[in-house]
Amino acid sequence: MTHAPSDDTSAERGVETLPEQGVSEPRTSRFAAIDCGTNSIRLLVIEKSSDSVDVTNLARELRLVRLGEGVDRTHEFAPAALERTFAAIDEFAAIIHHFDARAVRFVATSATRDVTNREQFAAGIRSRLGCDLTVLDGHEEAELSFTGAVAYARAEHPGPFLVIDIGGGSTEFVMGTSGVEYATSVDIGCVRMTERHIHTAPATASAIAAAQVDIDAAIAQALAVVPAPRALTLVGVAGTVTTVAAIALGLQRYDSALVDGAVITAEQVAQVSDDLLSMTRDERLTLPGVEEGRADVIAAGSLILRRILDLTGADHLVVSEHDILDATAWRLADETVW
Image (tube, rainbow, N blue to C red; front, side, top):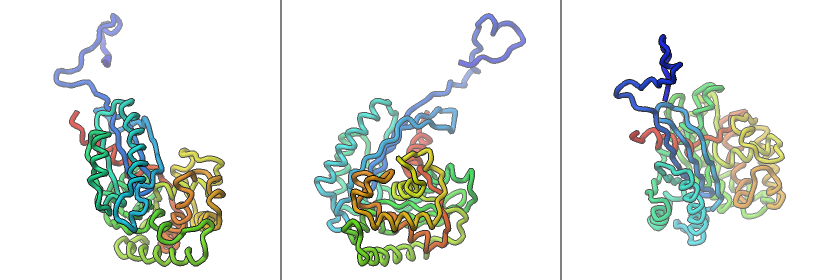
């Protein structure tokens, strides 16, 4: 309870000043968001006060579960992929319970949009978390990606912003200044391109060439919708971008404090991509941010990022660790009736 300044000695006597009638004390609540993509599933637990726009991150977790394994070919979740994902959700449920989150929101993107057995996945989520599955459409995904990515970038970099979100199954191109003005999603992602083209490590020249044809066609499709040359700042989000950044920065181990907000050049991205495509899987595993579940797909992801920079003419990008996950948690807190 607050103490108001006074001309008399009531404060000195330890008498508390009561809040004005009808004015309630601020309350603090905790909220959990889960973002499930083609390759990874992530959890964020935040704490927010009813009288403040500021939030505190309490937990941020990531598991590489490859939910979208084979979806490009079969259009359904494989039993083993569901088992891996449900195991991660069980871990997240324990964390959410530990922090006593007031509300939970579970969002899913590319892979979940493409499958025929979505209800099996949704039922598993309900039984473990007590919340429904929200499958984001392209517009919702674009809006959340943009909100998360530019929340901090706009303080140091000029708009308009072009936000690039490279996922496992798709890549989003979102552009705007204070909000989304143009957006599109194309079906190129690190898992999808690996399964279609890059089957060996090191990658063969023919596989790289085939992947690049596929990637370039999708980027051209995106740039027909989003006027990328108008953007003054390119912002990259998600695991491919942050991992490439950690490697480009020469980190010995992944450090989010150094990666978030970093600026890397197109030349650095090209070098990292060349290196990753020429490495064995074991060699990739020695790099910062590359772990089991990412080692086989990061080379294809880096090629997507490289071609985006090449075809948009951008000479650098800003790296953001804030994206759909953060924006989902913020929105959940904002929608709460206190």
